Length: 63
Image 1 (cartoon, rainbow, N blue to C red):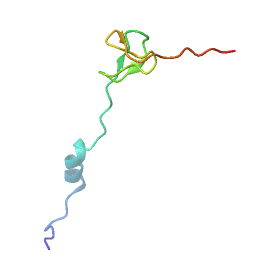
Image 2: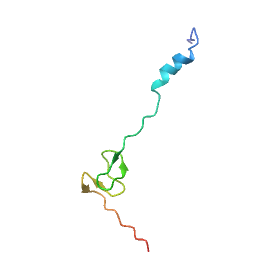
Image 3: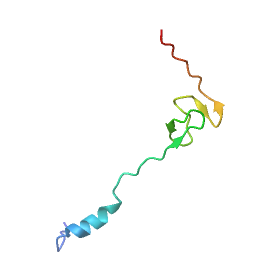
């Protein structure tokens, strides 16, 4: 079994791991209601996509 001849320094190991990070998700605003949504998806708040109603949302009535 192969064993490293020398110990890998902290700096060298950390330089190698600089790309191990979480990327922040991209969001856009819905042109109809202004909610924050993922791009190329139906708005969960109003149900519109590209200016057309895809999902009909029921209006909540407070009685």
